[in-house]
Length: 275
Image (cartoon, rainbow, N blue to C red; front, side, top):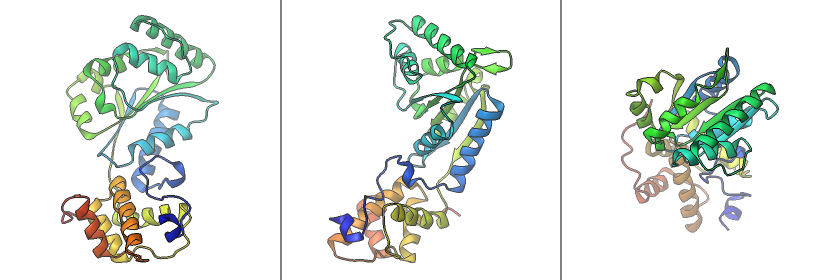
C-alpha cells in the first residue's frame, strides 16, 4: 500500500546491497578506482578499506566483485570472518569452488595452495575479499598475512582486500609484520550534502517514482544534518518518513517531519555538520 501511495514499484530505502540502487559518490568512485588499479596493475599485497558503520563498505565489496570479470579473476568473498583457522580456510576454498570437506588446517592449506597455483597457471588472478574484517581474531590476522607469502617470481598467488571498521586499522598498525603488507589504504567517508539529495532522488527514481518532489529542499537539509551523510542512516530516515507521511496522507515530506522521524529513531544531535 505504501508503494502504491507514493507511485513506487519497490521499496527504495532498504539496507541491502542491490546494485540497482548503487549511488556512485565521489568517495565510492575513488575507493573503487584505487582498488581496481592495485588489483589490475600492481597485483600484490593487501588492500584495506575502512569506514564507519553504514558508509557503504559492503556495497563497495559487491561492486568490486562485479568489476572483476570471471574469465580473468577467481574471486572468493567472506562476509563474516568469525571462524577457527580450519573453518576460515574451508570457507576460502569454498569461495574458490572447492566444496570438499578437508578435516585439518594443514590439508585445507595444501589444497588451497594447489588451487591458487592452478588458477595462476591458467592465467587467472586470485582475489580474496573479506568484509567485516574487524572481526578477524589475532590468529586469523596472522593466517591472512601468511597467505600473502605464496607467490611466484614477480607474481602473488593471492591478492587480499579487507573491508573493516576504523578500529581495525588502529589495531593492525601495532602488528608490524602485517601492517607492512598493506599497500593500499583508504577511508570511506559519508557522502556530502549535495550528494545526499542526489542519493535520495536516485533511489526514488530506481524504485519507479515519477513524482518530481517528495522531499522538500528543507527536508533534504535535515536528512543530511541528522545522517551526517551516512547512507544507512539516510535510508532509515527516508523509509520511516515515507511510512509516516503515508499514514498522515501527506504527499510532501517537509523538514518538520524529518525532525520527528530522527527523534523517533534516536539518531542523535544534528548540530555537527560535515562541510
